[in-house]
Length: 358
View: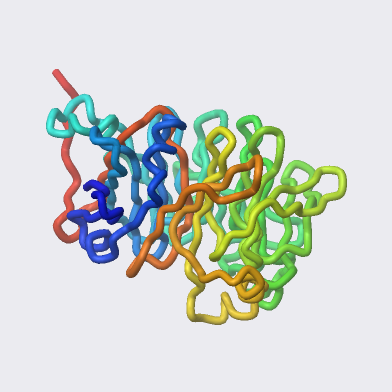
């Protein structure tokens, strides 16, 4: 699927074909200069979407269908995709399928771990190759288990027991030197749905090694990431991208994000931020974002925004339209020019079977 001269991407899959995705004029050149491609998840519409550049130098898109895609991670072994009830590993099988020669890599489902509905949010791979993730439903950092649906690794001190109730909306995870280190939560409440009353300014960042609160008074913080010696994150409820100052424990604003910001990745001097449309439910009502949009005379955008870290200015965009309303996560695929992704059997899409060569 290619981005034509009109700037619109059309695809074979029903969701992308009906929605059309529009890229800013310079996005393809930016991907080429950075020598990267991107993959992002669309949460409730269940899409994993990969964006690269074709032989003509235009943006191309590949998309795969899963059930409610949330966190995604990438390492040398492939893509890791969190869905409603499973964590999938997608591996590159392009070397055994000549029909995919137009793509650098072809990521197809290889292994899945059934977790049940844990409310998995951010997912990552630690330095030992272990899949770790945040369970908002059980208020914990966890990993997969050989005998059980999951293995809890850590809980906030203010949560008094392991229980299947989303009490603080734990959601984000940052890996530092191969180990889980920082998490984000929307509150410090210890009762079911307590975080919903604290969405405006109850959010915190926690150092899981010390259980110390390293930033507070945030509005629905998401997507903490450690990059170039700094802890970056999205203060989603106020539409702000920035970092935590280690001296003052304050969140330092870098750029305004015209949407509910969730999903964060980096390439060189740039950050890639996911933007979502606010849902028409109480979760998104009364957030500072609404007033910030008025302040900047801006409308809500959904898709991806590339921000120059040196200036705080947006430089490129990828806009998504109906029915895609939310972006959950985004990852950079370094050294890959044009990736292709495959998901589960859904509608006209099926998993390609790739045997090991004899």
